[in-house]
Length: 183
Length: 117
Image 1 (cartoon, rainbow over the protein chains, first blue to last red):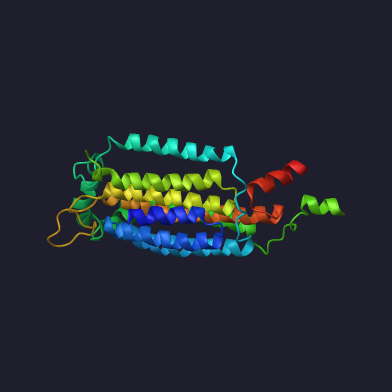
Image 2 (cartoon, rainbow over the protein chains, first blue to last red):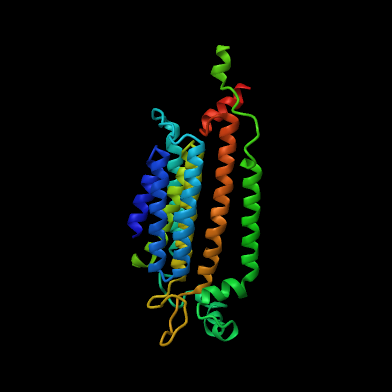
């Protein structure tokens, strides 16, 4: 599953046709959702499948309808192009080095499983009355988080409407420099 | 040696770096947004991997179930996914706006137009 994800992501980045990239992103999201089911996060999985694979893809396709769907092909190789690889490689090495003393996968004694999580698991059914712990934490214990989330979504929707809403009444594309040269 | 114990984190980090590469090395703005999305998905995988307890089940209480994965990261990531889509929508609308102003969404061409003025 993880290997599938990495391969899909590589093709997403490598594809020069943005339409192909977006379609592969849909597959990528679906794979992520499958991985979440594997990791016991069923609520997250169906959110990812609906929102990540569904709405995101629609948003990207809508954008591609308005802008060019082809990425400019990479120019001839220049020494400058090595730089991103170096940065990415160095960051990856640092991250792996930092992960070496992290708790191992599935370890029940990892620090993350202390603190409030056991309380949620033990008390939430009595206190909230819903058997799905994720729902009771989302809607009740951390209700303000969810309120904040709704505010973020509202802000983003307002921003989108201000930027490209109302029939897009802003000036049409300015003439490109080489076109003005001809006049 | 604890190789299998960290494989999930490492895969998440590799995905993160793929997204990072797309952001810094590609000039196309839509590709940059796609890179950010991949980066974001990698962070989600990292979090959800931390929540997993070996032998546990999904955190839905029921009869005869005693061991559950940690519900807290699930809640946080649930919120993050929705916020992520909101920010993606905002980023893409900025891309559309840039395309309307400059007629291109390639980083270098935009810079050339700016320099020409």
